[in-house]
Image (cartoon, rainbow, N blue to C red; front, side):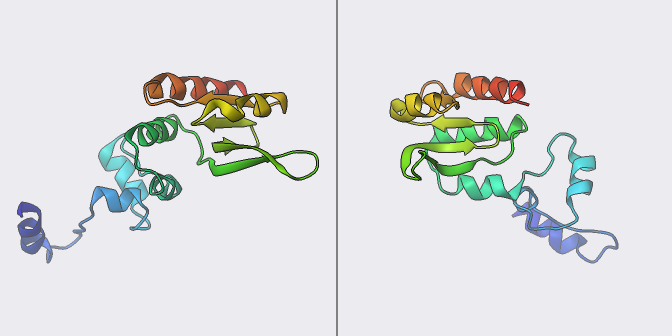
Amino acid sequence: MGYLRFMNLFQFLPNRAFFCSSGVRAGQFPGVEAWWALSCGDQTPVDPAWETLKQDYDHPAELAFMDACRDGGLPVPRAGFELEGGDGLVIAMAEWAWPDRKLAVLLAPGDGPVFEESGWRTVHVLLDNVAMASSTLLEMWERSA
């Protein structure tokens, strides 16, 4: 309630603007990113594509893993990646992948060997290893540059 009162009192002053941090992170206020970075230090806006990707997930472990990847500077992965064999048929699936770096994130380890035989590196994310998996992926990312 205090925020709304504040807005009502100060809305007519010159050079005033009101934003919510989630709206800035979602890219709803074009042109605010530079101001946000200067005002909030390292709380720079999040790429809206990360927020769009996160809307498809609800498990805390998945969301924590995505936040760690985003905070580590990784670009948004391709979700639901399908690895095709030489005949064009799908031979394996990854939850998230960066095809240009041949990195795949698997929530179930079953397709790991297929990816690895095709020259990919994989990370398996389990409910209890989110921190370790994200750290491993960030190291792999650095080495694949």
